[in-house]
Length: 465
Ligand code: SF4
Image 1 (spheres, rainbow, N blue to C red):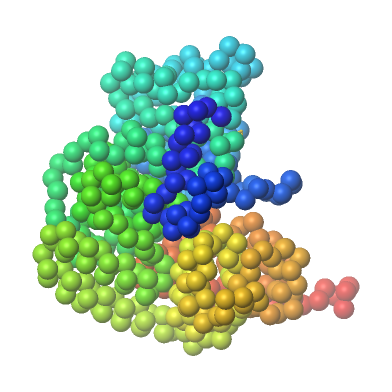
Image 2 (cartoon, rainbow, N blue to C red):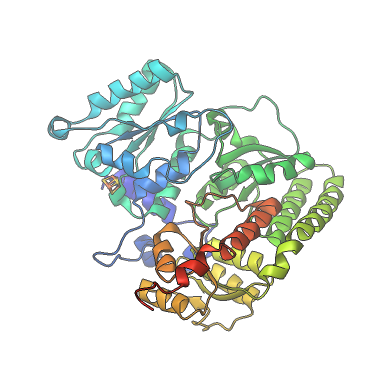
């Protein structure tokens, strides 16, 4: 690993916005937050993958992967981030290096690829991603990007995050570092307002940002930049003029918020758009911070009025499902911040959470789950640290749960147990953010539970009766 990359990783691990990190000793901090993987365990994405996930939603930029074609194939559009404008981010650009490039170096090929993209597509910027093989053969993507920027007069941004640097979550942070080093603060917005905000860590999965954007618009709050869902390159470059930052996905891009607070004095808070209560809290916190930053004081009253109207409306719409869903038992297998936000949302519909995974959750996430579910600290029956597919299967087969909400990787466990399953992870096909998203989640749970297919698949086969 290059010295520059090592230094960058050390910088990212010393994160003032992360309480867990700050509680560690200097030596422990250097080791980072990654648990050593067991041989044979699926790693869940490499650092390059994480950086690509974080940056690819910048929709009008070109994203060029310098490496073997499989790296691009592995990471291409695996989050269903939506764009309301350019579709260029969906083009899979790769240098597709071959044996000769491994022997002689792939820098020339990279330079030519950048030129070809600029000539054919004329994007406002090109992000160039390092991968394991090109890092190992010593290709200096930073030097190539600098040369190309000078020659072509466009921002060419190196994202020096090869897969071996660590896991996906570290990749998110290192991708964010590339934005801090090369993008944010390099442009000025056409105009500013006292109610400009940035949303950090939202990737506009299946259009979730569009479910909350109308709420901000109703309050006169402008999303100056969303990093990076549905983003335009120039918006991200001028994000430093926002008055408030909201960090959506817990710790994955907290470094952007902390560095922006240090460099430009922009206050930030961590919030969630999942769940009715959380959505209202997010609106309140944004309004309070904006007023502290000089926005008109009546914003607070207007926010409260909007919350009142929206909450009344959403409860009315959910009420029709509440009767059908009350008492249904849910097994929730997801990770990190999503656990507590989804737990709160489901409890709002009187559903019973029979277990939730806390494998990827931070200490604060676990505390929040305990608080919401009213659990004791060591309640391992409800807060599952690690559940093998066999245990999951047994739980579903014994009908200790009526439905499992999880990611695509565990769907076949539920299907094998002939139990309803709904995808709520990043590969989901329905948006669950904001008030609107809660109605959608409840609607999808209801649809899944009442699908007549389950009765049919549970009937014993004539030859097995
Ligand atoms: S681990 Fe390396 S080779 Fe594999 S996808 Fe990630 S960057 Fe590419």
